[in-house]
Amino acid sequence: MVLFIENSNAQEIDFIPEEQSDNFKDLPSPRKALLLSFVVPGLGHHYVDNENWTRGKIHLGSEIALLAGYFGLSARANRLENNLNTLATSKAGVSLSGKDRGFELAIANYDNLEEYNDYQLRTRRWQNILPNTPENRWNWESDNARFEFQNTRDRIANSENQLPTLLTLMVANRIFSGINAFTQAREASSKMPEASVSYLNEFGERGITARLKFNF
Image (cartoon, rainbow, N blue to C red):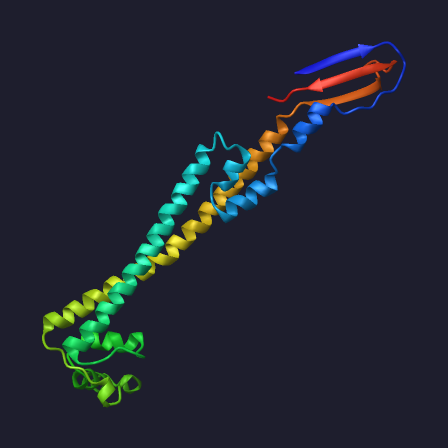
């Protein structure tokens, strides 16, 4: 809506309404809204409008759920890792301390070191042969114990494989939250009334013309 106020007196006036100037100072900054949502999803929405930030609450709730899932899976993987070490020590007589994933795979698939090395010789994979030293020797008490080791190792891998996905979702949540908060702040700025004063009216004649524009 545009409001025209005209005065036939020929004079030039330039002013900014005090109330409008104060309102501009209170407008949310799109850049700040963006950065706040990058730090904590939803915080930018709260900054723009702390009375109506439902969208921000959704982003914040998603962040909390993702963080809980990430730390929960990390804790689960650590707990299973401890169980794996205990199984290897108590049921196979070998320590996993300082051993790599390849050694764990060998323990999971073969009953003992001799069986493992014999298979590497028969398949001519000499580079995979392990030295027959005390720290490399193992011997499973039973197949069930070895199967339990395999299952525990698979559960660890499954938990660890989900962590990058959760991190990606957290980054995406921040990006979407930031863009939405930025847009919301910019829209809030565009709704402010625009005022202008000219000493020539719309017909080019001398006189004051005041325009007040409201954006809806």
